Image (spheres, rainbow, N blue to C red):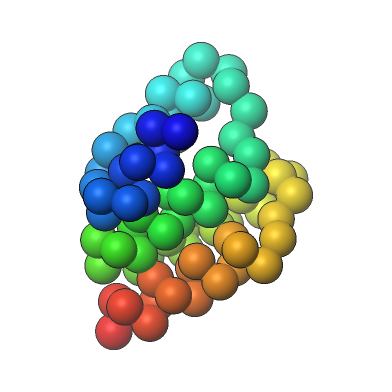
Length: 80
Protein backbone atom coordinates (compact mmCIF):
# COMPACT_ATOMS: atom_id res chain seq x y z
CA UNK A 1 0.00 0.00 0.00
CA UNK A 2 2.77 2.45 0.93
CA UNK A 3 4.74 1.76 -2.24
CA UNK A 4 1.59 2.22 -4.32
CA UNK A 5 1.14 5.63 -2.72
CA UNK A 6 4.73 6.46 -3.65
CA UNK A 7 3.99 5.35 -7.20
CA UNK A 8 0.95 7.60 -7.46
CA UNK A 9 2.93 10.51 -6.02
CA UNK A 10 6.01 9.82 -8.12
CA UNK A 11 8.16 9.66 -4.99
CA UNK A 12 10.61 7.07 -6.28
CA UNK A 13 13.21 7.54 -3.53
CA UNK A 14 10.68 6.68 -0.85
CA UNK A 15 9.54 3.63 -2.82
CA UNK A 16 13.14 2.38 -2.86
CA UNK A 17 13.38 3.10 0.88
CA UNK A 18 10.35 0.88 1.47
CA UNK A 19 11.90 -1.93 -0.58
CA UNK A 20 15.11 -1.58 1.39
CA UNK A 21 13.16 -1.72 4.66
CA UNK A 22 11.39 -4.85 3.44
CA UNK A 23 14.70 -6.52 2.62
CA UNK A 24 16.14 -5.57 6.01
CA UNK A 25 13.16 -7.12 7.78
CA UNK A 26 13.37 -10.27 5.63
CA UNK A 27 9.99 -9.52 4.06
CA UNK A 28 9.58 -11.07 0.65
CA UNK A 29 9.27 -8.87 -2.39
CA UNK A 30 6.38 -9.68 -4.66
CA UNK A 31 5.47 -8.68 -8.18
CA UNK A 32 2.91 -6.08 -7.10
CA UNK A 33 5.35 -4.28 -4.79
CA UNK A 34 8.14 -4.31 -7.36
CA UNK A 35 5.89 -3.16 -10.18
CA UNK A 36 4.73 -0.21 -8.10
CA UNK A 37 8.32 0.72 -7.25
CA UNK A 38 9.34 0.42 -10.92
CA UNK A 39 6.45 2.70 -11.87
CA UNK A 40 7.42 5.20 -9.18
CA UNK A 41 10.94 5.30 -10.62
CA UNK A 42 9.50 5.81 -14.08
CA UNK A 43 7.33 8.69 -12.95
CA UNK A 44 10.41 10.24 -11.38
CA UNK A 45 12.37 9.90 -14.63
CA UNK A 46 14.70 7.33 -13.07
CA UNK A 47 14.79 4.73 -15.82
CA UNK A 48 18.10 3.22 -14.68
CA UNK A 49 16.65 2.60 -11.20
CA UNK A 50 13.60 1.03 -12.83
CA UNK A 51 15.77 -1.35 -14.83
CA UNK A 52 17.82 -2.16 -11.75
CA UNK A 53 14.63 -3.08 -9.90
CA UNK A 54 13.50 -5.27 -12.77
CA UNK A 55 16.86 -7.05 -12.68
CA UNK A 56 16.50 -7.49 -8.90
CA UNK A 57 13.05 -8.94 -9.41
CA UNK A 58 14.49 -11.54 -11.78
CA UNK A 59 17.54 -12.27 -9.60
CA UNK A 60 15.35 -12.83 -6.54
CA UNK A 61 13.24 -15.27 -8.58
CA UNK A 62 10.08 -13.26 -8.00
CA UNK A 63 7.39 -14.23 -10.48
CA UNK A 64 7.20 -11.38 -12.93
CA UNK A 65 4.41 -10.56 -15.29
CA UNK A 66 3.82 -8.14 -18.14
CA UNK A 67 2.99 -5.36 -15.67
CA UNK A 68 6.58 -5.28 -14.36
CA UNK A 69 8.07 -5.32 -17.84
CA UNK A 70 5.64 -2.69 -19.13
CA UNK A 71 6.43 -0.45 -16.15
CA UNK A 72 10.15 -0.75 -16.93
CA UNK A 73 9.58 -0.05 -20.63
CA UNK A 74 7.47 2.98 -19.75
CA UNK A 75 10.22 4.23 -17.42
CA UNK A 76 12.74 3.97 -20.27
CA UNK A 77 10.42 5.89 -22.58
CA UNK A 78 10.01 8.67 -20.04
CA UNK A 79 13.71 8.77 -19.30
CA UNK A 80 14.63 9.61 -22.84
